[in-house]
Structures are given as C-alpha cells and as structure tokens.
Amino acid sequence: MSTDALITVKDLVKSYGQLHALNGVSTEIKKGEVVVIIGPSGSGKSTFLRSLNLLEVPSSGQIIFEGADITDPKVDINKHRQKMGMVFQQFNLFPHLTILKNMTLAPMKLLKKSKAEAEAKAMELLKRVGLEDRANAYPSQLSGGQKQRIAIVRALCMEPDVMLFDEPTSALDPEMVGEVLDVMKALAKSGMTMIIVTHEMGFAKEAATRVIFMDQGKMIEENTPQEFFTNPKTDRCKNFLNSIL
Ligand SMILES: Nc1ncnc2c1ncn2[C@@H]1O[C@H](COP(=O)(O)OP(=O)(O)OP(=O)(O)O)[C@@H](O)[C@H]1O
Ligand SMILES: [Mg+2]
Image (cartoon, rainbow, N blue to C red; front, side):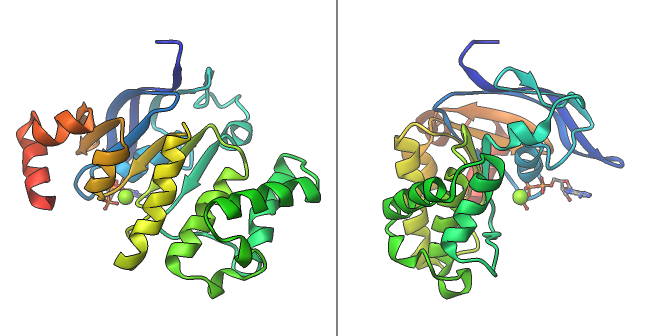
C-alpha cells in the first residue's frame, strides 16, 4: 500500500441473497484524486459509494480510510463518516430549516463549533457558490440547481477529506446541470479528493484524474480520461461508451 492512499479497498463484496452487487472490488484512492465511476445501471456504482462510508455494510472485504479499517466493528464509524461528505441525486436538505440552519446544524452538533463560527464558515461557502443572499431561504424556495449547490457546500461545512457524489446532476433540469458541475470543477481544482458517479462524460474528460468502469459488481477497467475515452480496452467498456456517447 502506498503511503498517500486516502482510501484502500480490498476485495469488497456486498451480497443481497444470491446477488453480488459488489463482487470483489479492490482499488486505491489517493489524496487529491478526482475519480469518476461509470457503468451500466445495476453495475454496483451506488453500492460502492455507499459502502465507502458504511451506509451499506459490506459482506466481506476491507476499507482502510486514513489508516483505519472502518469495516472493523470496533471502529467508531461516525468519527470517520464525518470526514466523508456525500451528495446524492436527491438533495436531502431538511425542508423545515433555512439554508443557513441546514449548513450549521452538523458542525455545531458534531464538530462542537460555536454558532458564530459555524455561521461564518457557512456564509463563506455560500459566497463561494454565489448563494449568500439565500441564507435565510427555505429549500422549497430554491431551484434544483441551487439546492444541489447548497447540498455540496453543506457537506463542505463538515470539512471532509473526501467528497462522494452519486449522480449529483441527474435529477436536475438540463439548464441547471452546468452550474452544479462548475461548483464541482472548482472543488476539484481546489485539491479536494472526489469520487463521483456520473453520466456527464464532458465533466469526466475535463475534471477527472481517473475514470473507472464498473460492470456486474466489478471494476473492469480504469485509466486516465484521455486514454479511457479514446482507447477503451474491453468490449464491455467499448459497448457501454458507444451506447452513451
Ligand atoms: N437494498 C438492496 N436489496 C437488494 N438488492 C439491491 C439493493 N440495493 C442494490 N441492489 C442491487 O444491487 C445491484 C447494484 O445496485 P446499484 O444501485 O449499486 O447499481 P448502480 O450501478 O448504482 O445502478 P444505477 O446506474 O441504476 O444507479 C443491482 O442489481 C440492485 O438491484
Ligand atoms: Mg446508482
């Protein structure tokens, strides 16, 4: 194992009865990498992401995150989970709380930040995504693209070491996809380690440091975006790319 690995996954299996949603996945995510995961529906992409922070409990295998084996039942998973931000297709904002409250709740409760400190950080992040004037709005008063930008900065309020994205733009109207991808590109540029399941191949080409292709619960192929898109190696990957490009 190289020393700059942030996450090392060893032979990860997740079974639902006879079905192996993950069928022996091994990989290493280094600090600062922007990894895009693609693959057909049902190939295990979401299961992989959700396993990384133990939203799904693996059937077997290991996940080493920042040196700790988080699949060890003795580990305090909440402590490690705080260091992994997650953004879903559905924004999962608390509808009854203002944007500012949505963003300060976890840092105050879990990081024990003072209200002033948490609010200062939240406002700084809101400014970064051009939404500081919406701090006192409720989620229902925002567009889908705005809600997803808020979901991203809300995760950033916890000062995570890695950000996991599961199809963050696929529930959005087309005209709002760009503004969310722009926030993600800026985040990638800032050096954040990111693992992203997406169908946005333009984003993958521009922002990814590595693209991984999954099929039937396995990582079949991986490469730099340049190589990956111009020179796919396996037929399965070629067929998939032909079907979406
Ligand atoms: N809770 C569950 N119970 C049973 N089977 C499940 C469960 N969650 C996922 N699966 C199955 O595991 C497989 C992988 O699912 P997963 O959601 O990871 O795929 P995916 O690659 O994210 O697909 P999509 O592109 O459609 O989001 C699928 O066959 C799915 O039906
Ligand atoms: Mg999925």
